[in-house]
Amino acid sequence: MTHLTPLPPPAPPSGVGRLPLGRWFAIAGLLVALALTLGTVVTVMTVERLRVARVSVVDVIDPAVLHTLEISTALSAQESSIRTYGRTNEEQYLRDFQTGVQAEAAATARLAALVTRMGDPVVRDGFDRLTAASAAWRRDYAEVVVAKVPSLKTATASTYAPVNAQRFSAVRAVLSDQQHRLAYLHDRGSERIEAGWRLFYLMLALTLLVFAGAAVTFTLIVRYVVLRPISQLTQQVRAVAQGDFEHTLRVHRPAELAELSGRVDAMRGRMLREWRRSAEAQRQLSDQAAELRRSNAELEQFAYVASHDLQEPLRKVASFTQMLEQRYGDQLDERAKQYVKFTVDGAKRMQLLINDLLNLSRVGRVGGEKAPTDMEKVFDTAVGNVSAKIEDIGAEVTSDSLPTVYGDRVLLTQLLQNLISNALKFRSERPPRVHVSARQEGDMWEFSCSDNGIGIESKYADRIFLIFQRLHPRDVYPGTGIGLALCKKIVEYHGGKIWLDDPDPDRPGTTFRWTLPATSGE
Image (cartoon, rainbow, N blue to C red; front, side, top):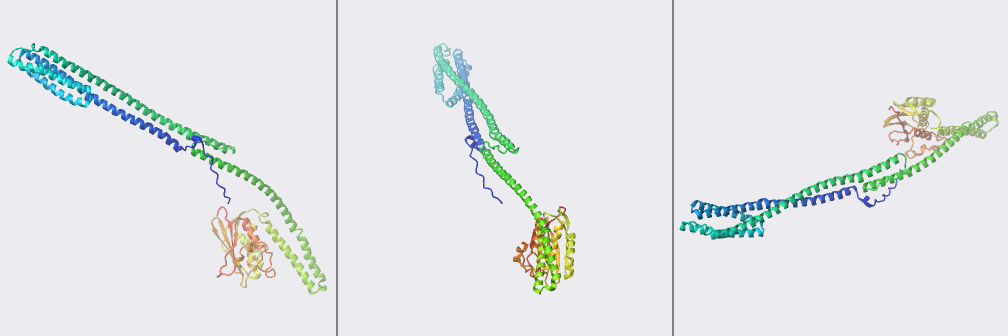
């Protein structure tokens, strides 16, 4: 079997073609992941800032505005109540004043907690000034009026009206500043919330764009890195399949397809070279076949000459030598008669040798066509051809049930006849016994021909099938040494093989085995 050398690796791709398909997707996936990670971080930060701004506005600034308004309302109620109490000296207004003071105190306490959470120094300073201004107003006006009215029993509002106006104007100024500062902080917080929502929506839109870009990127990768190179390679392979064997197979990306196309193109080149080499060998074989046909024709001519022109002189030599012995026999001495006998015997053996050589040369060239052949009938014909010799020596030739095989009836008859004749010729002192049997082995039949003759040593198993090879002298066992060579050629012509079975020490004799193809129906 011919071993082909491995193909050399294809030239490595250059540029982006060096990237394998997995790396294309890995790079695109990494870029998408980075974009999504960055977008997620910015979005989370935006949401956190939005939450802080909302908490600052909703939970701190707006309640501070409300509590500042509550303080303003409580102070206004105090101022009105204490002023009316100073004119009328009625306890009801004093109680209203005290209720206002309590409401202011409660609102001031809640506002103080919110001011601490805001951490704005302007608001804290305004809160402190508001607390001081309201305390100064109560100390310099309200508490004085409350203290004076019971003892004087007269209206005191007009007496301390300038103080009230001065101190309460300071309270209103501080309240106004504080409310303006809280309104400013409220507006800034609302702007931050609005900016946060705008940024959030922007990041959401960018995230959607990233997803859309990722889809477009992967689509382009699949189209230009996978589908288009595959389509190009398919078109190139189709061109080669349609007969353009010189068409080069090559795609430049990705690395896997570039390597695949390079290796397939290398195989295409090798197949093209092998095809050309095979075509050249086929041409040479065709020339040799023509030469062989011419040689066979010459052999046929030689066979014709050998069977007619060459045998005719031999027949004349034998005939005229015998006539010489008959006419001049009384004039010949014993040595001359022996010479005549040798001459006749040599001519007859030469005729036999020529006939055997002709039979050997005709196997597979001259004869009938192969067909299903009943080996039972072949066996009967072969036994009938040597029946005279069987009767003369008292031999027994038997067979098992034999199958039908696919072969040439004439050649198969000659095969069995030669094997049976060999068994009868190389017999021992015991009455000859020859038995033919068969068994099926797959799509072949294995035949055997066994006898109880003198046997053959296993060391001569290969030699006996060679032409002109003899194991015994001609004067002991006559013959040309072509019989088993002819048997081998007949078996091999039918697609089988023949061999000498290993001798069995417990059973004397020789066993030949050979195989023949079964018919299609077997």
